Each structure stands twice: as C-alpha cells, then as structure tokens.
View 1 (cartoon, one colour):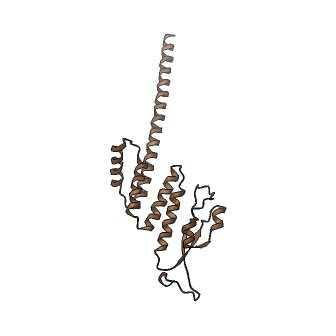
View 2 (cartoon, rainbow, N blue to C red; view 1 turned 120 degrees about the horizontal axis):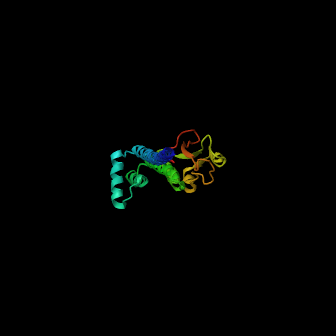
View 3 (cartoon, rainbow, N blue to C red; view 1 turned 60 degrees about the vertical axis):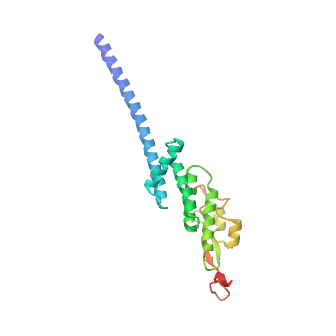
Length: 205
C-alpha cells in the first residue's frame, strides 16, 4: 500500500510537472509569435521606407534616437512617422514623390485603425500639382477600380476642369463604402484639344 501511495504521488508530481511545462511552452510560444509578428511588422515598415531611399541603418538610427528621448522601446510606428515627415519636407517640390509618400502614409494610418482621408486627399492633391506642371492644358479624369463601390463607380470616367478638381477635391470619395475601408479612386490627365484637334500649349491659351 505504501508503495502504491508513493507511486501515485510520483505520478501526480509527473503530471503536474508536465502541465507546468506545457503551460510554459504555451507562454513561450505566444511570446515567440508576438516577437515574429513584431519582426514582420518592422520588416514591412523598413521595406516601405526603402522605396523612398531610407536604409535599414537610417531606420535603426532613428529608432535609437527616439528611444533616447522617450525611453519607449516599441517605437517602430513612431520611427515610420518621423522619417516620413522628413521625406515630405525633403521632397516638397517633387509632386510625384509626394503623391506616393502621402499614399504610403495613408495606408499605414489605416493599418493603425485610424481615419486616413486627409492623407489620401493630400496624395490626390499632389497628383493635381504634378499635372499642373505640364506644358499642355489638361482636364482631369476620375478613375475608379474594377471593384469600386457604387458611389465611386458613379464618378468613374467623369472629366472635370483642373480648377474644379482643385476646389472640389472629389477624390478620395467621402461616400466610399468599399469593404477595404477607404477610397482608391485616382486621377488621370486628359490633354485639351482645340477645334482642329490640336493639343493646346499653356502659353497659347
């Protein structure tokens, strides 16, 4: 009987030890998953910034600088915004780059669960500014996507004067209901022709 008691006592200890090890493994697994998610997110941020000439070294240098100021270790998002704001200043006269930087910021803001309408609007405005550099007189066409919502489809193919595009800023569409969560409409430039079908230079208009 004493032997059996000792046997079951040891068995219970073994079972409890296994449970403890399983719980610890589960905790470690969750920590590892969270770490992998953070690394994946960090790599995504760096890859996005690389498109604009930011290197990994630039990213981690800024990360260290921000940490020294705030003592916040999990500051990857802050690094992204800090570097993007610098990119906006650096490329203030390059409207094509501004368009893509603003759009990238808009996507990132949406991933943070925040409203990205203003940044999408700035991206669209930069597109208009780029069109305005043309030597030709142009109108603006609003383009939707193949799977745009009904409200955006109503605007698809609509051609408006440049000054109206600036004043009304029709895209992004405020009434967009697409499941992705934001409007993806975009502008294209349509050169204006005279009665003879000739393109109209700005200086001659």
